[in-house]
Image 1 (cartoon, rainbow, N blue to C red):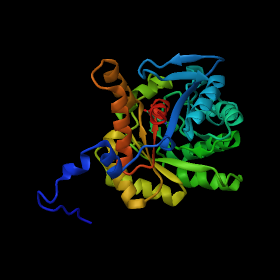
Image 2 (cartoon, helix red, strand yellow; image 1 turned 180 degrees about the vertical axis):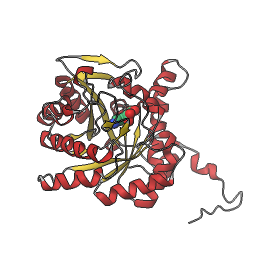
Image 3 (cartoon, rainbow, N blue to C red; image 1 turned 180 degrees about the horizontal axis):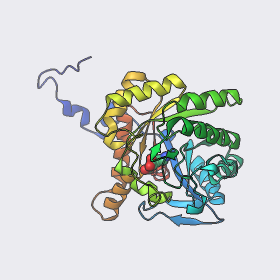
Image 4 (cartoon, helix red, strand yellow; image 1 turned 90 degrees about the vertical axis):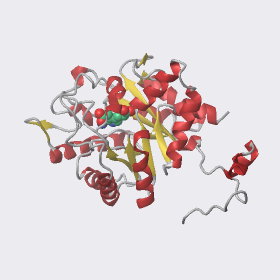
Length: 332
Ligand code: PBG
């Protein structure tokens, strides 16, 4: 449908912008607290809250404090929290065995949150990078990131997370065939309600820099992730990846990063109509915070404007480090 506009002055499009009341009436998109997924970083220890320097306002919390943060998030109306572990260099090995250890940091955090705040949905990250000595999302054999062996490990990792109580599995590794393998394993182990939010179109992006600091991966990563994450120049490939992951059993799909890839969000929503999420990643967050802290932009307004952009682009929700701050503003 083409928009039709009467000739001036029959149409004066400014009529629709004349007052707060009229603007509220014609407003097309709304951001709600229910659209937010809050990514958090968990670390060892007790009572520890440690700032992440490249992400002002973001901290790594020990498991006990993660549960308390989840309580606050749920009270703000945030429906989901996503856990990322900060692992010490000693816990990283070539075989990544810690990834499917039932008592690893992230599984302990899942249990602590589900015990304390059963009503919040807990999402996980499935990829080997927090446990891999060389920082890659998959096993490295003779310099190659091997696909099929990695998928087997991701399945083990997923099952450990599901057993710990995860509600939403978030494969972020970009290996081929992992959604189907994970879905089959979940079904055969009785986790038929466990959801998969696939990082289906994940780009090889420089915007992940601050995140890699936050999880201690910056110094670990050998080389780059260009053989598995997408080329920022491509968009048709994103549609093929989304289609593939949906056909293998993903319930929801994600585009990542967010703001530089809003065109992909729109194409994906239009093409598939599936629950679609964007990840406003660490570098996006850091840029806004840096400018705000310098007084160069109005931080709150830029935050809300950046978030409504995802709704306008067709997303149902967004993973954002701003979740609690945005929720507080939205709740008034
Ligand atoms: C790793 C993972 C990354 C992010 C989420 N999961 C980084 C990467 O792929 O190197 C990035 C999130 C962010 O930048 O906020 N599996």
